[in-house]
Structures are given as structure tokens and as C-alpha cells.
Amino acid sequence: MNRLQVAALWVGVAIFSWGSAQNEVPPETAETVTVRLVVETEPGVLISRLNPPIVELDDPFRLGDALTATVDGEPYLDDPEFYYARLNPVIWELPVPQGAAPGGYPADIRATFALCSRTQGFCFTDEQTAMTTVQVGGGANETVVVRLRQLER
Image (cartoon, rainbow, N blue to C red; front, side, top):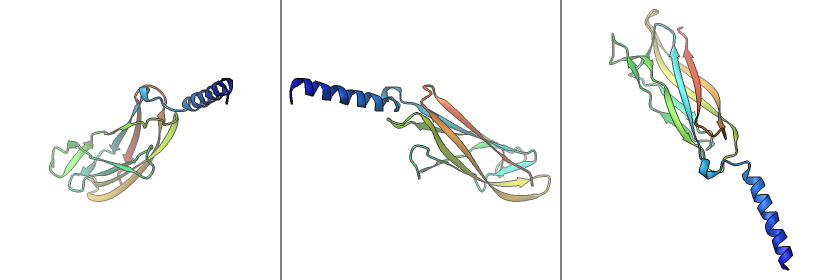
């Protein structure tokens, strides 16, 4: 192979590599995406502390992995050992893997709550799901807010 052929081959590889890299998040601009789950209840519905809520996010970058979050909240003043009046937002900080293509990554959230209705005097378990899309490639920290509402039954 002569020098001209080697130079042409090198230029071809460089162009191919540059074209592929355009569709990836460069390592020097690695992002963190924040998924923020807000849980709202109807007035008169309390969240059990004895059966703590279970909240999972499907990792949008590692299919099949679920990220479980610890749930905390504001205690219900009349019975603070047993109930939350409301929950604090659940927050996941997700590092975007090096080489991830820009675009939307779907993620499901599953939440199971033990709830009690003060006005109707009974407790029940409520399972909620939400779908969200995490956007990669925007440059800045991106926050996705998902709201789950438990209705009084």
C-alpha cells in the first residue's frame, strides 16, 4: 500500500468515526438526569408508615434494572408514628452513560402505597404506575417530574 492509499484510508476512518460520534454524548459533557416523583393524595387520605411505600424506577439506561427509592415524608400530627400526612418528592440522580445517543429514553415508575381514608374509616393498598421519558443530549441537568395522585375511595 503506498502513502496515498494509507492517507485515504486514514481520512475515511476519521470521517466514519466523526460521523458516529455526532450521535453520542461526548464524555467531556457527561450529563446527569434527575427524575423527580411527586406523590399527591386527596384531602383526608393518609399514607401508612407501618407499610412503607415501595417506589421503583426502571433504569432507562440499563434495561431490566429497577432502582428502588427510600420514601420519607411529613408525619401526620395526630398520629405521627403510624402515618405520613404527605410524602417528600422521591429523587433519582441518573448518570448518563458515556456514549449514550441523544434522545428520549422511556422509564416506568411503579409505586405501592398503603393508604387510609380518615373520612371513610378504612385502609386500602393502591398501586400506581407512571411512564416518563428521560431526555439525553440537552446539555443541562434535566428534571423529569412525574405526579402520582391517589384518589380517596
